[in-house]
Image (cartoon, rainbow, N blue to C red; front, side, top):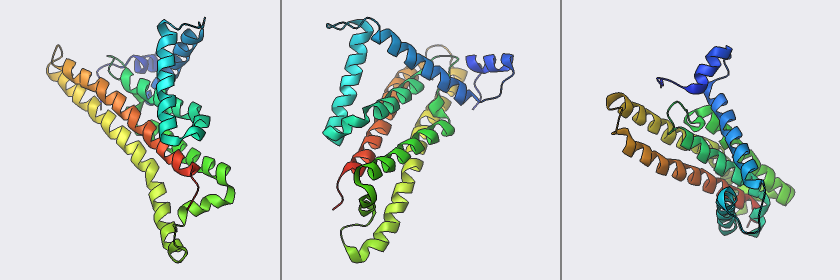
Length: 224
């Protein structure tokens, strides 16, 4: 997919660097999140307003969803889940700004996110249960344990593939459709597609975050 103009790609060309547009726009997303966090945390008041009110609503919503999905123990992993949620959402949304490219429309970014979720799921499982975490892969019947173990391993290995391809397919597909509409009718026709893009951005961030929570919740559970 070739964009007519990407702001940071132009900056890369001027600086003669070749690190990839998904990396430069990932840095941009991180800078945006740092800036919003700084603004929202500066001058915190007992009665929130402005940015503080917005961020408290976002943080409270993510925390409530975590408790409902993972239970009280899940609140320990709030920084990880909130980072997934906010990073993916902002990455999706900046793709709607002319001259910007969503990092989540690149498979490399999504694979990194998915592998992080995959790794943390099993790190948390081992941390919570020790060697007993292997019981999660054995099933309830001892005689079928070798077969269930193979099936479970395949299922777990498919998780990062599913997470990364789902997010990539939706965001990359939306970018292609949006570019086609911009090429055909550059004025008003792309506006409905951009509005739909806002909805897609929120849905995809929610789906990735929810699946990451479900995987970690499964690792926190006791094996039966």
